Length: 224
Image (cartoon, rainbow, N blue to C red; front, top):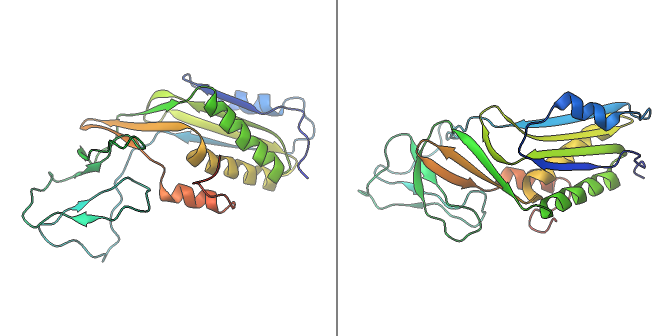
């Protein structure tokens, strides 16, 4: 049975930065039951293209793999006809905004992005995250949880998200924090757009994020 909390869950969506120490201190303040606090902070990082493993088969000379929507299992890469024009060296296909049906491949240099832009649905996003925290309380013996997520344009190295959890023991706190992050990355109503010198692209959830959620017995397609 999950422990009863005297410190209600807190969810905040904001443009301004947050102070990790202050948020953690406020979460466990005046609660003598707390024996462990686990916090995760996500940062904006450089985007690095994934390289094929050594020895992996390469497409024939003069052919170019075309990309579908990232993370969509139904997309099958195809090859352009031999002799078709190739993009400049160091470029790859990027996609339009996910979910709009208006996906137009463009070329973006394989280089560090300038900033990350995040959008959300006010009200709906907060309610979705509150529901995630309630699920965490049902699964784990935790006392309190706090989720802060920033929106707007964020530069490299800036803080994006904070997930903090308190419990009597570290094991339950670690598991609950990981559960919330796995849920948050795939199910919270946020939209991410990468901006770079060569243009912008909307970023969809990765297959690895769906797999992380699945280990908790939750399918990304029907979680809410």
